[in-house]
Length: 225
Image 1: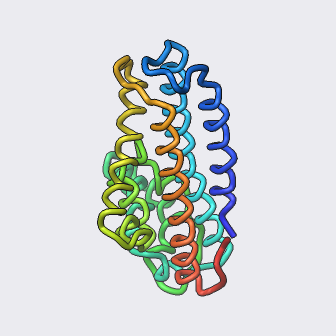
Image 2 (image 1 turned 180 degrees about the horizontal axis):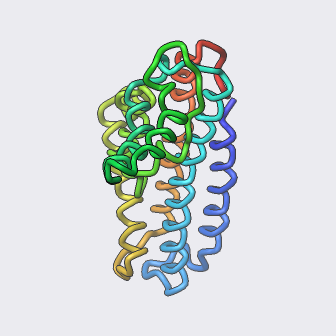
Image 3 (image 1 turned 30 degrees about the horizontal axis):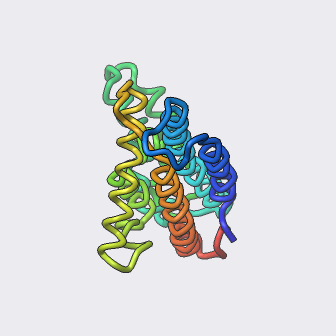
């Protein structure tokens, strides 16, 4: 059973299929102005849906773990560190005589992560506050916080498949960024958009399963989805 986040992604990507089907000259050698606009719009929309999936699955995972009543020592150290980074940074930037309130808030929200036998709640916003775009290295970093060392290796068997998947993810993100920054030379054909859509769904479907198994291991319960 897929996560709610993945199910929402599948519905969102169906918008891309609707958009690409609107190409009036799919077989034309020279793309029309409209087909170029549709291709560029499809890339931007698809990349946005792809990025949204990670924020959604992160929130879904945090909600699940919070419901399990995990004690701090069972949360991966990498996740504890990124969760506590923001408040600690804020404390560092505050003058010593004004730190009492910040320290009290940190103890209230994060002390449980650094003790034993104490439960608390994670805040999902902190875990992905650093992400700017779903580049391959960012995806590896995100899943590593949750105890999955290399998500691309975890969801593929062959190095060639892994390399191709990383390349297409990078290509999608780069093309989206180029379009968003006004590069009119950045184009996407109908077949390009289909390849990117397939890549997005393939990555997220496989990562969904791997993540579910890791959350089951962390929680000691059943899979969350």
